[in-house]
Length: 336
Image (tube, rainbow, N blue to C red; front, side):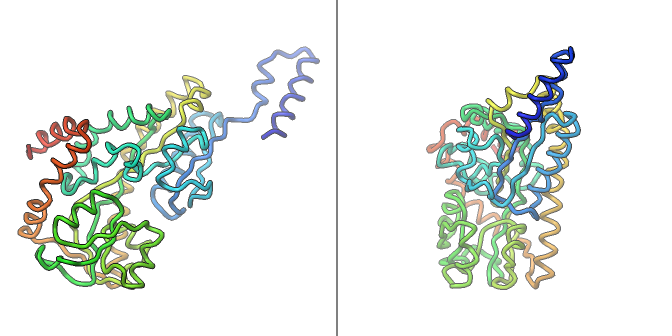
């Protein structure tokens, strides 16, 4: 980058010496290149989405803004560090997993409240009420949300088929966050908070005999080597939000800012469709690997909801600001 700047300055000086106007110097400058940090591998659909966004931003801005997607955590930032890394300007952009930021901002854990959201249509309604708060949190951390995309819904992956809550009692299961931990405790399971990077080792050693996660992660972990059934509970959702540091954002012209925001708004529905497709594709891969998809019986689902219902009130006690948007959502989905 320094070499390009020196070359541009030399070119500009020569043009000015020849009597050319200053704008020629501006045209010779390198475009703004912005690394985007993500912990997910190249094969993950969130990375595919980010690369598509980057390509379209470059086209839309005529090359004035280039986003360089750095996948697989290659910039050295772990998932829970992404929000702070963008805030502090350590990286200009990141793909932030909301649930991993709850240590700093508990409000970002709303989507994973057990059984709050039953399907993708309900999730869209929930986002209508919580996104303004998420964007305020981003502003607090000196960044702007460009787009948000959910992960596919969660499944309970087990060695055996479960058709009633009582058969889950005492089962050791890996979970990724406190809401899921509380849910599994409420239904009698023995949850263990384990990072994704240690999950396969936990399965191999027998430290856990089940995993609560998406079908996408099930494929990433080749769960068919350890487990036989995955239960469609739709108990939790989480989203990624792509953000940009506001000091960096100010370096982009107002016209290009508008173009980028409009582009993000236009692409976001396609990115949501990619999430649904990833869930479908992963379900097929798990089945092809030898696992069986279990549609949870209505009686079992009702029991799951009954046993975990107090967790919504518990969340309100921990995060009072969440009560208003959640109650507005529940009214709209007719579950108030």
